[in-house]
Image (cartoon, rainbow, N blue to C red):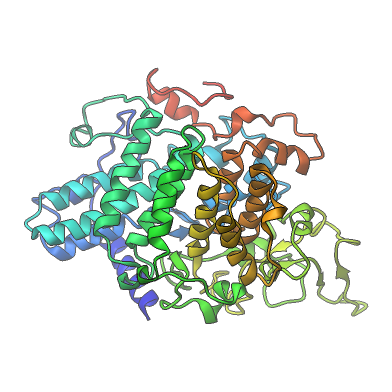
Length: 525
């Protein structure tokens, strides 16, 4: 019931914002159209309900939606999980952004990739949505609400801004972030440089620390809305990201993870892994969910994953587009009885031939064009309602779960300054393995940190495939992404390079930056 309520409220928000005019800011700092009239105090907001609508609008870029304006957590080629996991063994493709990522052949001209940052036409990309959050925060601060209510709403907007900023920072590196004074003078052309890495981290960290202090506790937050648990989870991901530059960030990861593992905080693992992606497990009472995107057939967030992965010739309730496959290398990395591969489908029967009535078994031995790269990464249970509901599923999109906290703590214990492979770290890993019906690992199995980390990365890929899209970042953190790309491409990937761990900025951003915005290493300006 909570899920439906939220979708109705967000739909109402979309309608509210549709009635206002748009002023375009071409400042080189914020190329995305921003509706300044909708935050003009003389026009809008006038009531607390108006402010609530503005807060909900900050969720929009983080929803699951293919259309315009889209959502960065779409379960399509327009979603960040799709392109990030396509850089790894989890997803492989023969065309589109999935092929570019599989081969690491994307360039500054690859709009399928650069569009996440910015494109000149609708939906304009996502980095300008950060400015939208900044303006909403300012509107709340200057409202007549009580300080308690201001704090409540600002915490939610801060989390939205940080969440989106982290996703883009992880993909593209430091962003161009327009300060409030620039946004309030949209007709004053002010090209701005990208933030430094340190400034970018602080920008995200400050928002998340505030959100962690003032958002509701996990069990008190409305299903599908931000909580202090999400803010802390995003801080963990931010700090893991920065351990490449400074190992002391592992100390911060450890502190946060231990805070989130206190029983009173409210998180725990469910006993049945597949249920996390099935209707029976997707409830507001699920103690493992840190953040999910609520979906329904008619809502502003839609889950179209079934259509993205299912073959068009399968004899089943959903005949999809099959835009991609997984890899057989990934499938082979699972132990035989691992329940986490329940929805990694290695074979299927085709629709019976219309003339002979004979169905064909498609499998690894006879893969045709649908299983030649790997199995079907179905992930979610089959939703028979997809066909009759515009190809959308009513299953929610799972982004972050408590299992990530446990594996992050295991990594921090081992990799922090002065850390080592300890029994605690192995026990934490085994907590995840036990749920998957696997035998425990032993301390003697890990003679070095490197051996432990290799197993940890395997557990991460098996646990979180097609969820947060963060496995690419995990491989980059240990400088393993390039080698994995080469392995998956049989050492034939001529455009792959370690210089391409970051995606390229679109050329339009470089041009409009008028010399102040510098392209990422490995690409042309």
